[in-house]
Image (cartoon, rainbow, N blue to C red):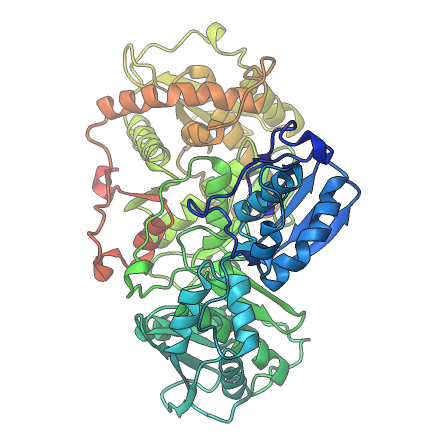
Length: 632
């Protein structure tokens, strides 16, 4: 008999096939059961709300936080038919007493109980003093790991709903929801609250907790549980952000927003807020964690965002600018791979509440080079600036563009941003090397082109630039220093009428890499990006500082490379670049001084030092390097 868990259960379970041959192949452990170690005991009962579907040779069970499939023998449904009623009614002890110790039936029963216990589908016997409301007691039993402790916490809880208008639909719906949850509620007017906002607080045995709900523009929200001050701060920041988003995307054909939140929408927001507050009071898992949403980042609080038309509600990882509570001073570890970095970018760039723009392909052409774009204001300016960038793959282009947008918001000449320390350091060192090599005369001998001109990525991007796009261009490659394994490549457009006074032509792309072939390939790729961006009538401005293969270790981490993937394949090329990145950074660091320094992390708790965009990026695991203008 094997278990195939889903949702919150991720490990396969198996039972030896020969554990109980007399039961038709149902595995078993045999003997009497122990009551310790988390194993079921005679007082166990099935968690309320568990649905069961018999299969031809097994069972499928669905609980609140997971599901389980048991297969292996036609005897499984038979055993369950005998066991289900005692499990649901609390008569397991009497049922097991009627089974002969050591028998095949006892072994099959114990094996099935083992699997239910492994997947959190069994509960201890009902507590001596359950919650007086049967509906609340059933909800606690279906949700809590320790129902008696949760019921005791709720029994001492007292809730309060604050609203500028106590008769508003949201306030009255919140009172109904908290009352249905078995908690005494007080409704208090608070003239300092905006008309559409309510604040729910609970006091009891544990620390006071609060949740705010309201509306910004057309979008409703429910904050994560926290202190009263944190809930107020989060609500104010969310409303400002949601209102700004609504104002910047005005749809003149849409119907005007009603002055008050509609009744059904108010019930949704109030019910969600009450649910989160009750779970916090009883120390139950937050509802945001129950959907197994891969977009949510573990450790980052989640807010609920809801829209009435079309009807939609989902949770999003979000940290506000005012991080008052200690649990808001979170700092995730750097992402271990490119996919994880993009998950965090998606959270920071959520189009309604994210503080940063999300780089997306939009309607840009994806051939001959993948392109992404985003719009962001520069630091200290209200005017918007559109950024467009490309890369060997769209995911790499999105990562690079996100880092550039963050730097623009922080102060373009002051900080360098990366997904992890190596990525940020590689970007900063390349920027410094490119600037200094551009200002210094190239007195180093040129590498022999015969050794690198056959690089497959260079051939591809150079042919795309000069052949497919028909751009007259010239490629130059220079060694950074004698005997140094670092090269700068530059691609310039050849003037239509070359001659004295025409100069060397405008810069299309540049790169700094460990080999002349890699540098030339990235410079040609940057040139293709610049030309394609201009052809798509997308503002691009001057070519950005080179980043090249700085993201290669992140892209190659945990990604197996097939034996046939040579550098002509993007995956093979990234794997080769990743192997050379550390040595390249050491070389550039030796040539160009101490380089950037990581912005010192603030000792927790230090809200003032850890606030702002730099602190928010660090909270999500990104690295922010201090690269002052004079050092760049």
